[in-house]
Image (cartoon, rainbow, N blue to C red; front, side, top):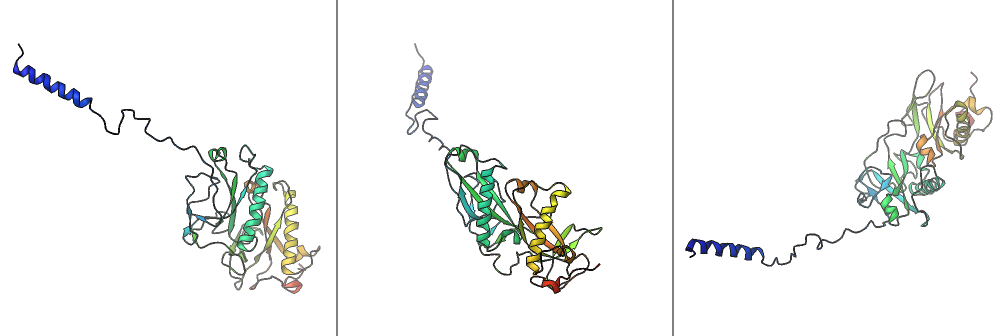
Length: 297
């Protein structure tokens, strides 16, 4: 004969089992089939004329793409977005003809965007590509990005700026390279420091010489075409004959891009005149033979 205590215990167990077997409302007990599947990587194309608060990245994913208004603080400005052929199976490798072609297009577009060769200012042009998954999903774009720098000499850092670079090099501008004072030792030039042209100085930016498709200069003899090219730029800038006497009028400082940038197609050489024996207190642009006479000793 069952006791009252046994009966009550059995009833309680039955109630618990019934609760455990009760309906679960919107849950069906399968914890996986109600979650939506993650979408596959999708193609996207970045916009031109927008900026990025983050530093430049040569590979851009959709997750890292966060455009901001160029009126606010930013480090990168996209001046153009181009496209590779849709039939390409993978992104072009560094040093390839395709990547050099992309840089050439970016070079032209950036110059038009800022109003002069972008190398005439404290600027750096870089090319960004889609990520591997983005390329597999159909992205075929390349992005042309400009960044303002503190200097175009060694140890440059990125400037966090506000305001677009559009037309930034039209006319006189704070970004534009101009008169310089050299720093160095033993008759050479190690560093160029920007100064106002009304101050005493011994150097001046005269323009950009574009090198042909040649190997990066490593030996002393490799530099001869760069110096000859910059002397021609110097002669036009000052308004003196590009002849055998030009080397006796002024020295020249050449600043090519680094080997890595050369490999992707940057062939622009920044050229500076250098007065190794005197200083001046005005720009020598258009000064002619009287402003840059042949040195006799």
